[in-house]
Image (cartoon, rainbow, N blue to C red; front, side, top):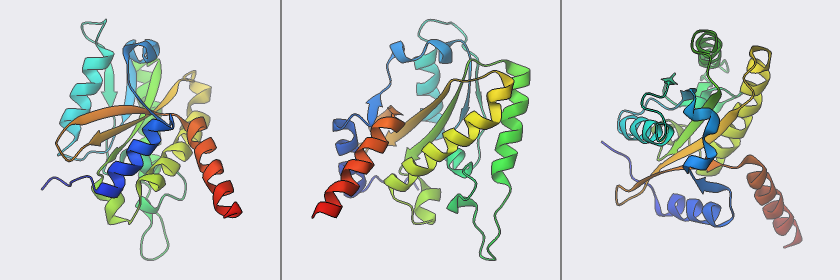
Length: 198
């Protein structure tokens, strides 16, 4: 059964679009991705097909066969932060899914020579909901994933790490946005300042 975006999630995404945190993907953003990218999305069977088809149609706008290489587990890039709640077990330990993804990413960079790595999160996300994570929590994890990936792959010569967010709206309209981490940090710090002043 396909999950439905809640009214709260829909409103939060609308606000983040208005604030410039989420920016709809366009061809001008994609010079490196068009020349080949490794993407790390969630494996969600209700959304992956649309996400990947949309991804390849955007990246293939000027190339007949763009190299787009997915590495996918349930939760996708949200598994990568060192203390991701998606990997937390009831005994206090963490599953090694982060290292699985990172090792495969390193291997794929060696094999495929991509120009970019694209980390995905999406909404609604069953894994995020299972772990009681909000859309804001997803963005925080996505930003942390970028830092870890960038550090890990820097010696391999790939410096272009993108953050994309795929949304399935209640009317089944689907959109992919670039998540702008610096705009997010400004938004969050402004919200915290407002809360302290109240």
